[in-house]
Amino acid sequence: MGKRIRADPGVRDELRVARQYQQPLSVVRGRVVEPGDPLWLPDDLDAATAFEEWLITERAEHCHRCGTRPDDWNDDRGIRRRVPPYVTKIVDCPGCRELADNSLGSNDEGVKSGWRRVELVPYDPDNDAR
Image 1 (cartoon, helix red, strand yellow):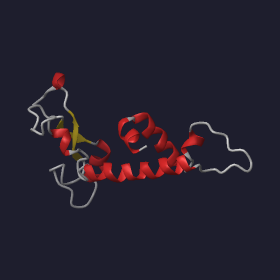
Image 2: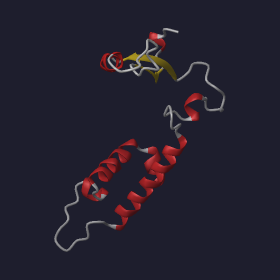
Image 3: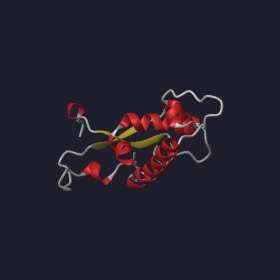
């Protein structure tokens, strides 16, 4: 099941739903549990365990700050891509600006006062503003 979880986004989606609603995968897929039937089948437990292991590995591979993986920035040979997969974008939030403007000790620098943030967005060569 572990290889299938890595390879199939549809299986991951089903397992996310099962995890969210704390239901066995077979029930999420439509199995009706009759009186006297076990709720969790051995395959359900195997799938849930494999998914939890996949989640731990997946989270460990992503940067905790920006959310990207080192492989996102390198080609198949491990060499840094010439065109980045992501670019930075400065986002102004009017609501946060209003809060910052009316807070004690606010300043005009934006990023420091909290109304402006920097995000990574997928690179789009058609809208390259660099």
